[in-house]
Length: 108
Image (cartoon, rainbow, N blue to C red; front, side, top):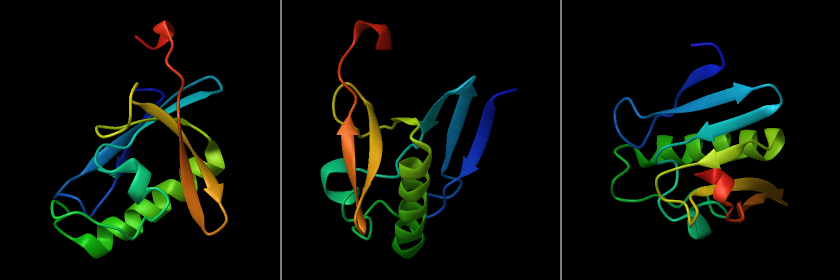
């Protein structure tokens, strides 16, 4: 489909993937299970979880996705984000921070 790109995101589970959906100047990155605890794993991407079948690969993938998200500024959607389920990522020195997207009825 035009505007939809499948992203291979290894480490969490076999075949774990995300999607980049673009239209004009807007992009949504659906990153699946890249993070389970955004307030912990975004600033500290090396922190893994028991559900990651390859924790080393999951950590590398998380760091790469966070770098891309900080550089490109897409709206992020994922399974374990804080309400309302959308956020943006910012580089913060050697780490990253997550900014929950403000609630808006336009998000539904």
